[in-house]
View 1 (tube, rainbow, N blue to C red):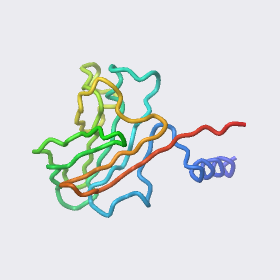
View 2: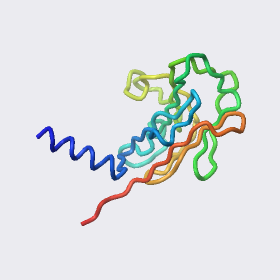
View 3: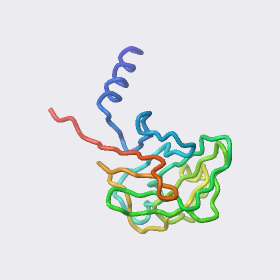
View 4: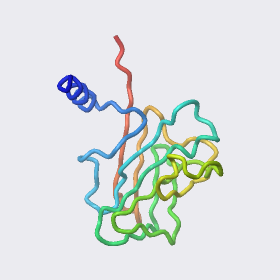
Length: 155
């Protein structure tokens, strides 16, 4: 049974299948200390303004020193751009979720509120559920980029 599960995991990984949660692959990761480490692009259910906060990009500082995010942006394929607050610093080893929607005021102990969050305050979902990419740029330099392409295997 263990071999079967490991084989299925290997097939899914080899085919590049994703299920709404993506992580940067080794060949896409930048050499910089700040990287995109997780993408939650396809929330459960119908995309609405009420659940847009569930869509997020996790950015992590893998370096040993604090990183200023002044002049840094996240941009998708269609050019929608999130600008980090000018005074925002990402401590060494820390991460932040950049959430598409507005902060919901209910149940602050929910799963989505487990880490530090920045909110884009959009009223609609930003990222494509089936295909898109997000690029992290700082000072006009590309730091990292993650792409995804979900597909269904049909008989």
